[in-house]
Length: 256
Image (cartoon, rainbow, N blue to C red; front, side, top):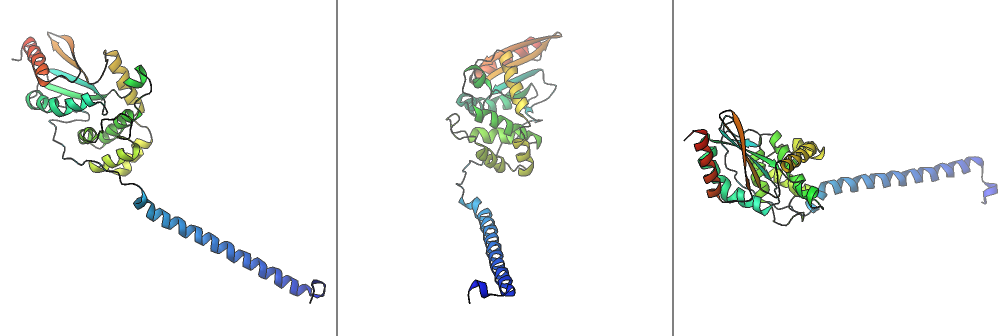
């Protein structure tokens, strides 16, 4: 039977059948795509390369409050301007900081505060250490959860000593944050929002104003007879350098 001889009813029936067939194919296609997406979403985390980080047991800090440790009423205040990618800062963290804690911070003589100088290179040399800035922001996000020093220690322990070569990518910072048991939803919201970009920039501006030429850089502040005095230690000096300077200051203010 040719087309001319088909009844209108037959033509409508064939058209409806073709339409239903197309609709079934479209429906099957949509279901297949949705199923493929669900499978991909489930399997994707297992397909991503594993981010390996060192998990450590951070030492407890005396009277830790935010990015500071020590008695707020201590006669001497030390501010460290540092960079989590800096090998000399790492040396201070490993060799000198524990002794400063033992003999001056834990004994109530020094209030010690960490500040980032991660913007310093980008402002003064060019190129920038974007990972340093991101690591500093991650540490401040951890501070929101009362775990600044845990993050501080883990960042140093996970620095690969090659600047901007993957030590502190966003994925690796997330893994480090997980290793110190942060609330990850809160951390990720903080980090992704850029909450602490201004604070990191302000730290660097403050460090430059204080005379920073490289990291680590330490500004020591104390008061003698109502007059505030300032001294500095530039670089990853051994504990003996800090000891000589701090003992002289303590003698000057009459606490010895």
